[in-house]
Image (tube, rainbow, N blue to C red; front, side, top):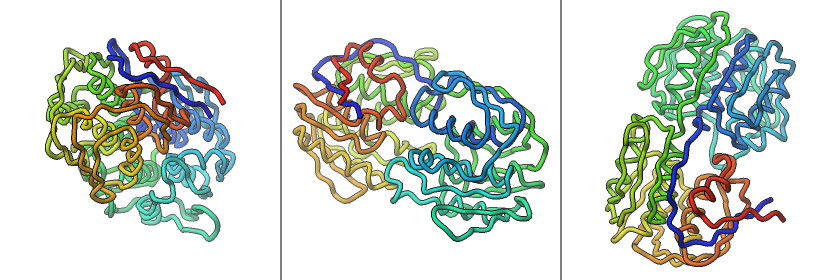
Length: 419
C-alpha cells in the first residue's frame, strides 16, 4: 500500500475539474444489468470504487469496455451467475446495489458481506426490507442470500430510513417489477435523481424524482442509453476546503450550481470567500471565522460526506465551532488524529465535536481509516507546518481520482512513496 508524503505550509492555487459523482456512477453501472442492450456512460470518475463495480459486472457475465477511463461501455446480454465474486464484494459497500438487478435477471442473488468504510457499522436493513416487500425471500446462509421465485412484484413501500443506497436499491428492483411501485420516505440526493433520469432513458416510467415519494412504472422491456454523469459536488467541496485551509485560491470546474449551493452555504458561514462565477465554483483567499454550529442533514441539508473536511477547516477559523454529524458516528472518531497535529478539539460524543481555532497544525504520520476522513487529513497536512505522511493512500483514491497529480498541479509538495 502507498504512502502520501506531504510538506505542508504552501498556498494552493489554480484550477481543478471534477468528474462524475462516485455515488451516481455505482448505481448507474448496476442499472446497466437491467437491460441486455448496450449502455454508454461518460464523465465517469476514474477511481477505485468504480473499477471494482465494473469488474463485478464482468464477473457476472457482462461486457465492459473502458475500465479506468472516463467513458465506459457496458452490455449485459447475458448474466451468467447470481453470486458476485466475494473478494470484489468485500472491497465495495456499493456492491449491495447488485441485489435488485440480479433478482430481476436471475431470480436469485447471493452476496457476500459488502466491504468499504466501516462495513460492520453500516447495515443494509433498508435494502432488504424493500426487496422483501417486492417479493424476495431471504435464504439462510452466509452474507445476503435472496430469491424471488415469483419474480419481483410492484408494491407500496415506506422506507424506515431515507437511505440513499436503500432508495437506489428499491428503484432498481422496482424498474423490473411489472406495475406501479410507490417508494415513500425516499432519499432526495442528486445521485438518486440522476439514477431516476438514467432509468427513464432505459425506458422505465418514473415520477417524483427529487421528492420523498417516487413512483415507478416497471416491468417493461428496457433498451440501451447514453448518459453523461453530473459533476461530483462532494469532490468540488473537498477542493474548496483544500483552498480555504491553505489560504489559496482554486477554481473548481464541473459541478452543477444547484448541487454546490449546499456546500457554499456552509463555507460562507465560515467566512470563506466563494461563489459561482459562470459555471466555475471559485474560492478566494480568506480569513475563516467560526460558524457557531454546523449540522449535517438529509438533502438539501449539509452532506455528511463533507463533515470531516469542514472540521479541518474549523481548526483554521477564529473562534469555536460545534460540528454535529447526527447521521454517522465514526467519521468524527477518525479525526482524533488532528489532536496530535496540535488541533484544539473536544469530542462531546460520537456525533459532536467542538473545534477551537485558529491553531497552527504540525505535520505527523496519519492513518487514512476511511475515504472522507482520509481526504480531510490530507487537507490538514497541506495546511500544517512540516512533513506529514498518510497511508494507505489507496483508501482515499477510492473516491478521488489522480489525486497526487492534481495536488501537484495546484502547487502542493506531495509525493507518493511505495512500500
